[in-house]
Image (cartoon, rainbow, N blue to C red; front, side, top):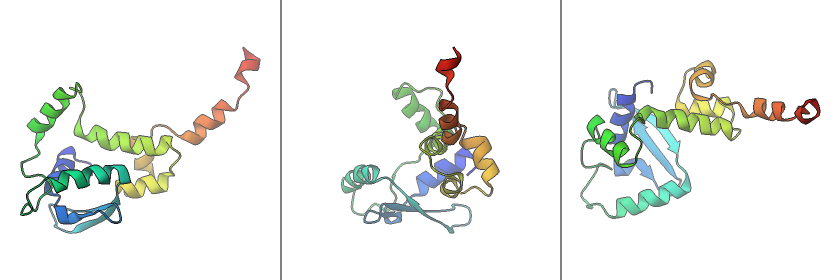
Length: 145
């Protein structure tokens, strides 16, 4: 998703039925085409928190969030957390960078971010290559100083 507003729209359109608590997946669909964009794995710890959140909702509620998740609401959340400059899209960039820093391959990161090419994934999202860092750390810098 290149458009940060599109990311917010996907978040706002999530339905409780899109969540598979057993397999720790969330299925999203394009708001524009209404087609499924596939299942996305979610860490078990986050699923546990999500399950707690959902258990407190009205049983008649279909959407995960009952109110509109918009730019104004995002700004308020950021201000309350002391992160005034945080953009919603920064979360996506952090996700991609953290995958790379933890040794996840570009191919896997590309698939999780739904990129059309590995070049886009490498240029924009994975600004840290753990293999390169590991290689540089192997140099006997102490002997040179």
